[in-house]
Image (cartoon, rainbow, N blue to C red):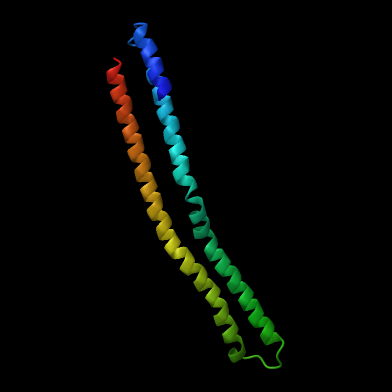
Length: 140
């Protein structure tokens, strides 16, 4: 913004009041600042998005692994029945539950933060638009 004011002062000194060059320079600077802030907000949510999408898969992997172990244990015994299989399968389901216990609250948290981020970005863009309008009126 400092370079904007220098350009505006030079423009006014030269008597070029209706030039849009300083105003366009300021608008571009504002847009760059908005883009930087948007990236800052969104990049901080990448980790949470990874948890949301990855936790169910980790739970599923644990479940498949546990079921394989349960079947392997049953296969190594002489007699196979539900009594031998059930404990292994129920233990394997704990991995799915753990994945969902992590993922479900993370989805709600992610959506809440995403909504807040969009709201803040909209407020920044509205403020920038208002500032650009004021600058345009100032230098008309």
